[in-house]
Every structure is written in C-alpha cells, then in structure tokens.
Image 1 (spheres, rainbow, N blue to C red):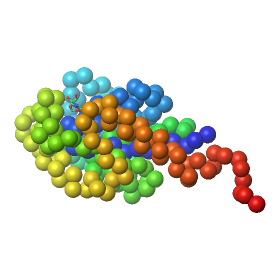
Image 2: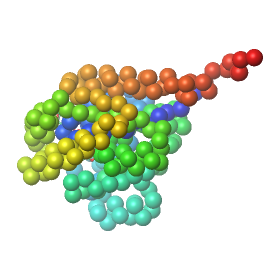
Image 3: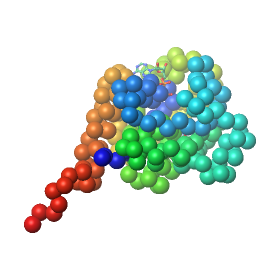
Image 4: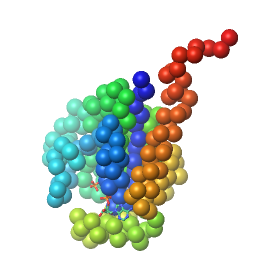
Length: 201
Ligand code: ADP
Ligand code: 5GP
C-alpha cells in the first residue's frame, strides 16, 4: 500500500488557500485536512472542529505545554497551531495530509519533517490579492493592511518552496496542485517499495 505524504499549502492571506483546499477535498475524499487550532474569533459560517478548533488563549497555551502541536506560530495578533495527533495516523493509512499554514509554521514542519512537500500559492498580482481580501469582508481595513504587509514579507521566501502555484482561476490552481500530488507519489522512494521485483542479478 502506498504511504501518505504531507503537503503544506502556504501563501498570503486572501490568496484563496481555503477555497482551493475545499475543492481539493471535494474532489478527493481520501485527503486528510489537518484542522488547526486558533485563538482567532470564528468568522460567520466557520464551524468549530471543521474549519478550526477555536480556543481561548489559555486553552491554546495549555495545548502548547502539553506538546500537542507539530508547529505553532503567531499571525497578525492571533495564535495558530497544527495538532500532531492525527497526522501520522492518517499517513499510515495511506492518506495524504493537507496543512494550510503560514510561513513560520511551514519552516518548523520542514525542519521536523523534511519529506513534507511545500507548495506556495501566489496571487496573479498584489492588486488582485487586495481585492480578494477586501471582497471577503471578514477583516476591518486595519487588519486587511496588516495581512497584506505580512503577505509581502512572506513572499521573500517563496523561492525556497518546492512548488509555486498561481491562483489565477481556482480550477487551474486545483489542477496544478493535484498534478503535484500525483507526481510526488511517482518519486522512486515512494514507488520502489511497492513492487516485488527484488534486486536485479
Ligand atoms: P485564504 O484562505 O488564502 O485566506 P480564501 O480562500 O478565503 O483565502 O479566499 C479569499 C477570497 O478570494 C474569497 O472571497 C474567495 O472566494 C476569493 N477567491 C479565491 N480564489 C479566487 C480566484 N481564483 N479568483 C477570484 N477570487 C478568488
Ligand atoms: P486565517 O485567520 O485567515 O484563517 O489564517 C491566517 C493565516 O494563518 C493563514 O496564512 C493560514 O494559513 C495560517 N494558519 C492556519 N492554521 C495554521 C496553523 O495551524 N499553523 C500556522 N503556523 N499557521 C496557520
């Protein structure tokens, strides 16, 4: 049986990570989406346990002390973290794991799990990113500005990623990410153990 792989999806706030990930999950129900914990307030329509585990600062700190996170980081005034409990279990079951996390978290996961594949999602332009972020209507203008500034800072390390996908249309971005996931499973280290040829004489 093939082993699952972890795919890290990173990119500026408002670029469309959540939208693209939702479509990937709808296309492939075997994918495992890692539900993060956060201290941010839920947005309208966000469901506790599905989109995030919404925690108080005290609860978040307790999870940190209990070593419950694979990684955690602060992002524009809130804390975010990846619970580690279910990730290995999902991969052992052959499921691919998707992490939608920011850059500091991606770096921590890269240090601990160098085989995790890092995919950076970019907007077609900064103007379009601003339009999307404002259009989503979930943050006030001050927070929008902080998120845009943070996105531009993070862009400086985008070159270090394994893949770079431009979210021009959602369908194309989903297609490219699916192709990346497929290609990563065709690497020799993933495939050789699956055949029974033994060593050539
Ligand atoms: P993120 O999770 O990266 O913060 P979202 O998925 O919440 O971003 O998307 C931000 C906004 O941009 C949403 O209103 C979403 O509908 C819109 N959006 C996402 N992808 C596209 C796209 N390819 N073209 C136009 N709008 C998009
Ligand atoms: P939002 O508040 O828009 O849902 O997320 C803000 C940022 O936090 C996004 O860049 C998102 O990828 C990131 N994020 C979400 N969950 C996690 C997590 O568990 N860890 C880290 N480091 N970042 C996260």
